[in-house]
Amino acid sequence: MGMKRLVILLVCVVIGQHTWAQSQQAKEKIESARIGFITERLDLTPEQAERFWPLYNEYRQRNQDASRNYRQFKAGIDPDGPTAEQSRKLVEMELELKQLRLDLEKEYSSRMLDVISTQQVVDLREAERDFRGILLRRLQQARQQQVRRQRLQNRDQVRDQIRDNYRD
Image (tube, rainbow, N blue to C red):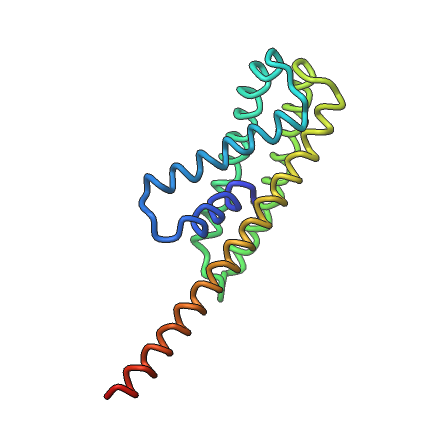
């Protein structure tokens, strides 16, 4: 699952039925948490951070743009019955996306070495994986809380119905 999709899914679950503005605030909080997490894990100096973040954001944006075409094509396919041509095209696009992501990672890793150390580039990959793991755990926790709240609501509704039936 792509990082952007994961973040969007997390935001949707966490904010539930809230307004678009609240959704934007949640996305901004997640992005701020990402920046803080990676900055701390890489132990970026202020000078490094000033040069690193525009480069990293450019990398992420290009990666997300590459994924968008694939997701749009995939969304247009009937999951119950894609044609042979659609299936073939999907396989081709998936391979092209993997290659493009690899090319982007190579390009930006090389460019980042002008800003941060080799160890920091290695630590960046680990920090990205760890941050995704944190998001996944929070997503699971949010789902569990939502299920608990729904169960409590259902229990309360049943109790109220029973109480109302006895009053009648």
